[in-house]
Length: 165
Image (cartoon, rainbow, N blue to C red):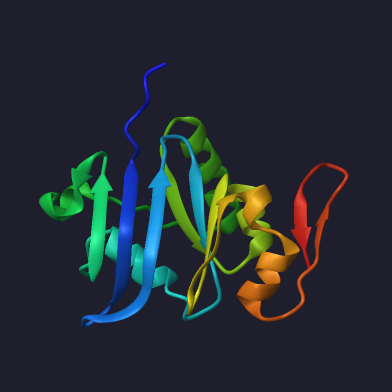
């Protein structure tokens, strides 16, 4: 079976503002048809990572590739994003796009939303990466408690969905 080119990769990425590093050591790979959720509290660097991945602000270090091409070689017209106001419609659209083969990165403060929408999660805080992996592996009570600095409990409902409180 032929391996597909990832839609987006980042390796050894350091991000920040004005040359001042916020987070380093970010490695991610977005495969066609998968959803990666950036999960973390305010100030963790999710928006800065998004802006860096979109080429809106430069990376401090590391490499970003879009469909195998270095991001620095692409125009802004080639880098697209969608913005919807309604969360339910967005969730439906995200899963439909993923099923059709579109890779999606989304950002959230809500572990329940992440568990519902994402296949993989990258948990970030001001110190860096807390966890990265499948939603089931990364969204543990221990990882989320470390992420938010409060006790977080995880349970799986009868329908198999993960919920956090």
